[in-house]
Image (cartoon, rainbow over all chains, first blue to last red; front, side, top):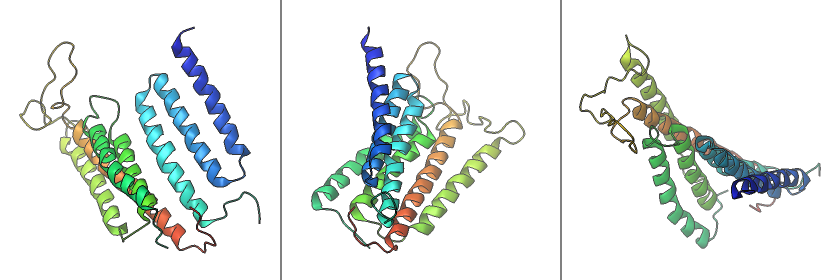
Length: 84
Length: 156
């Protein structure tokens, strides 16, 4: 089994694990950071599937800008999930 | 609330802003040769704005200047598109005229020539200007709007 398929499978497993961590976390900042990590792994997956254009857009928008906007929104509201 | 992070974070942000902006400009002006283009380069430059806002807080008043920069980018985009009126949209009026992006790519296998592409690099530059201004405006307005809320503990 070549190294290429091994990296693809490891990236997909990490993608599923970070996506489950987004749902699992009760702390919203931890969930936002996990969403950024998931987006970064999705960008790596786009690069491995030979779409570097989409990979650059995903890394810039998904990992940097969306995480910053989520953290600004969490600052203005509650940090914990649920009604309190 | 004008929060400020520690001196370590501010110094690293000052150092890292310059390579991020240079990489964004590289993505914009090599958009017709390599992966990237106006939107990707603009998003990369706007992420440096996110870095500065996180490190220094939402300082100053930049709403009107960013909005006018966005309008300038869109207006120049439409103007360049309509300069080829009578032929097609984005007609390559720079082709082999000795202008800046008017060169021709040599025959055969080559890594590409930056001085080619006609009106496509101009379109990429205008799209990059517009996307940079628009995403920076979104980030700055989000940071400014979350400042004026009633925050009990500013833990971020």
